Image (cartoon, rainbow, N blue to C red; front, side):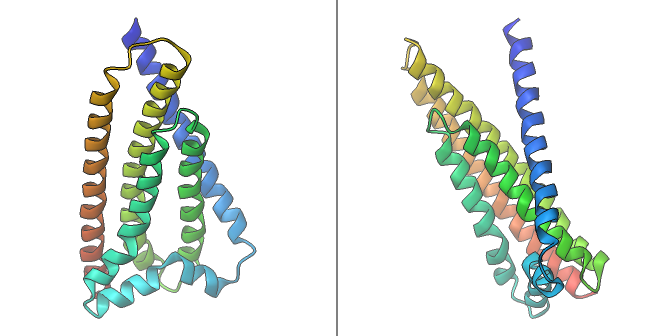
Length: 193
């Protein structure tokens, strides 16, 4: 019975994170309606990414994508250590969606939509998936802290959970680094077309 209950909670959390991300994307598109076209195209970052890739600066492309995603992952990591940070964790998913919504609108305004989408969407979708996994882990740990603070439950097992939590986030950071390297390679291929 506990496994079925845990499965429903996980599915509910996944649905909530997806809904908050979708709300963020929608809000990003709506907010971007007030921006001028040149600003939106520039905010998407795709022209600069393709320009850097065309000049052979793959490391520049990597530095353009990895730090931002890593910063969001670090924010989720630290939120996990707070017993009442669940709303902030949900807002992180919405904030990621907000940025994606603004960028997607900039891509649709660019000259070469297909090229821009090919340079933007793979990393955006995959890195958002990794960030959602991190936010989900942070939500679970913060709920664990919340339950420990409201009950007299044994606190000795939390050290093992923190060690596992940290290891998972290191893996997520490595996944983001690998995705950023793959994004730099893909941008190089696309800029050569």
